[in-house]
Structures are given as structure tokens and as C-alpha cells.
Image (spheres, rainbow, N blue to C red):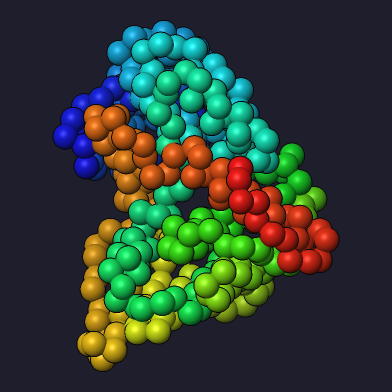
Length: 351
């Protein structure tokens, strides 16, 4: 957490992610959102009242005229984020920006967002918030400490029915840039950069608008020999049509000296189901079961903002900076290329 938690934050967007996740986590952490803007002033005022925010605007340009705002938190659809960032960086009192993932609808626009911020001297952090789920972060700690030895095989298996946003109908894509991007980024967070990826998509029978990626299957190959497998099943059986459900997210990392496995509680939202991790090693050959009360949605959303605030007060780069996220975007783009061409696709070494 930053030493200074009262940095004035201006919020752009008032949808579910901002209202039910960002602002809930910020208030829990003692952060200081002072203004919010939305296309509909009624919605902006409603969210402002709900979260004790002093000012509401129908234009982010008007909001940004407030010279107190040092950090801007953007929560908008990816196809409009580029234009908003281009506008935000023109305000000299803005020192930091937190953007949503995906950073944009493609790598080219993502690079332009990173360039806008770099040219303006503004610190950029990308909200890849699954890195702050406590089980994901605990697994990263175990890997970095060498508790698992050399990673051999890692898997993430999601059987869940996400709540798709209305704006996705104009994108032509569904799962990979919205849900799978979390799991692909988590593999990067845990293990670094893969050499290549093989991806296979089929459409989701339940989703009526046109899309290329419903159910997504991914294999990541690493130079070390490590293999990672992701199954993102957004159909999850006819659970919405009346069948019994089997919903959840499970992950597993097997190494030469230990194994970790866990669950992600997000599919039960709004019920609070904390994520879990279980761990065993050759040095301690029993199962260890550390547990926490926090949940990914909304608690983990404090992490990216905290990371940005710490970076600003220390003069450092956030770990989820723009250049790092370009690597995740390149991996996502490679997945779409792989699925379209039915072949493994090398990941670019530079972005």
C-alpha cells in the first residue's frame, strides 16, 4: 500500500466494474476518489452518491478541469479507451493513469496508448487485476522462492458463464480478450514469456451476437520445456437452460520439487467465495492449506491502484506497466492468429 492514500482520483466510467468493484475496493483501502464522469449525468450522480464522491460530471473533459486530480481511473470499453487516454494526457496535473484490460482492441492501438503516456511523462498501469487474487499471488511467491522446483506443467480450467457486456456485440469477439486475457496474463506473471501458443476456438451456443471466440483452448510452450494449458469453457453445459451446474475455476502448477493447486472464487460473485491454494513439496510432504478472507471481486481491485500510487510516490514503474502489458496483448493477438490459421504461432520477442 502507498504511504499516501489521499491522492485525488478522477474516475471515467460508471458501469459495473467501476461502481461494484473499483470504488468498493478503493473505499475499503482508504483511497480518495473525488470525482466521476459518465455519459449519463444521472448515472454519474447515482454512483457518486453511492460511494460518497463529491463531484459528478456528464463529461470527463469537464471533470479533468479540476486541477486537484492527480490520478485518472478509466473504466470504459476497449474500443474507446484510446481516444480517452489521448485526451487525458493533455492535462498537465495528471500524473498517473489506470486503464482497463484489454488495453485496446488490438496491439497497434495498445502501443499508441503506451506512447501517449510515455510522451506525456505520465505513469501508466494496466488493470490486470487477477494478479492480485490472493491464490494467484501466493502461487507466484511459491514459484519465486523455488518451493516448487522447476515448473513442469501448469493448467487453468474455467467452467463458468460470464456476464457479457452489451458493447461486446460490436467487437466481433467474446472470450479471449475479456476472460482468457486474465489467464494468459497469469501464466506470463507466473512464468514469463512463452515461445509460442496454439489456440482453438468455437462459438458459444448461448451467445446470440456474432463472435469468433466462445470456448477457448490454449497451449503455451516455453523454452524450458514447461507447458501450460488453459481451458476457458464459457458454455459450461446447459446450466442456464435448466441442467444442474458444475461451475468453478481450478488451477494447478506442478514442479520438480512441489505442486500447488487452487480455486478462484469469482464465478460465485456476488457471493463472497475466497480463492484457495493448497501446496505440497518434497521438503514438506503434506498438503498445506493457507486461507484468506479476501475475494478477487471486488477486493483484488485495490491492488492495481495501490501499485500505481506506490509507483508515483517512489518514482518507479508499476509491474503492470504499459510495456509489460504489450506482451500480454501480443500473446492475445497470437491466440487469435493461431485459431484462425489452425497452427502454433510464435510470440514476437519485441512489442
